[in-house]
Amino acid sequence: MAYDDFYERLRAYEGRAAALGGQGKDPVNEPMIRHWCEAMGDAHPGYPEVAPPTMLQVWTMGGLSGHGARPAAYDELLALLDGAGFTSVVATDCEQEYLRPLRPGDRITFDAVIESVSPRKTTKLGAGHFVTTRMAVRAAGELAGTHRFRILKYAPARTAEAGPATAGPAAPRRPRPVVNRDNAGFWDGVADHRLLIQRCTGCGTLRFPWLPGCTACGAPCWDTVAASGRGTVFSYVVMHHPPFPAFDPPYAVGLVELAEGVRMISGIVGVPCEEVRIGMAVELEFRCVEEGLELPVFRGTA
Ligand code: ZN
Image (cartoon, rainbow, N blue to C red; front, side, top):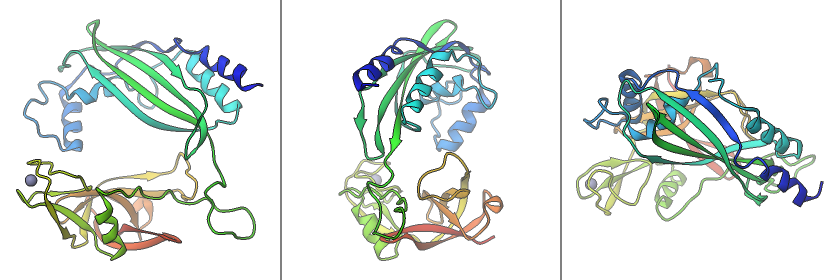
């Protein structure tokens, strides 16, 4: 099919419903707000009498059993993209607008529309189309906020960034960290086998990941402290699906709380995935995961 015809078929889905007559499974409630605030480390005193605005989408989630509010159009659009070879998907970004605070007891209803399908774009992941949906979230029939969510459906670029020439098909490579002037010092530390945490020289607050300004006082001046390497698993996931090129599931990804108090996301190694536990002691090590790519990981010491 010619590209223009194909894109016209995609665009015919713009304006069609992606969710219709959706109802929140639970009313806005204090336990979910409290769990969210604990997970996010948000101690604002206004919660849980009012829900954090960024929880907007949470109240619309259908869980494992779904919410039964999904008309066929969205799945048809994805199937059309699959059929044209754009079989991979990645969520790229979301935007939210807040019009009315949500409070415990509010009952949520929602609808979503396919807002736009982009022309074909070439990205580092591969060529594909961005699909944007816009959800209207209501409480007692009144618009409380909108949630705009964008995915890229793409055809994975398999060999464009292949590693050194070897016999047979080139192996996929791990994604490379994006090094910029705000975080270059961190990666310099990794090269020296030191895990460096930024410390505000104004107020002494430690911060991680690296940022240009202090999260506590806003000061731009900083130095670093080297992490001792001891930590505990604050939370974790075991990745099974979806598969990513160059990763070999299952593998554990942890949110590690360092002894210094900051948290970092990293691989948990040295113990079987099913034995990783919250609270498990871990020890920093530097692992060459691929030629030219050395990363800090944490070894379980259970
Ligand atoms: Zn500070």
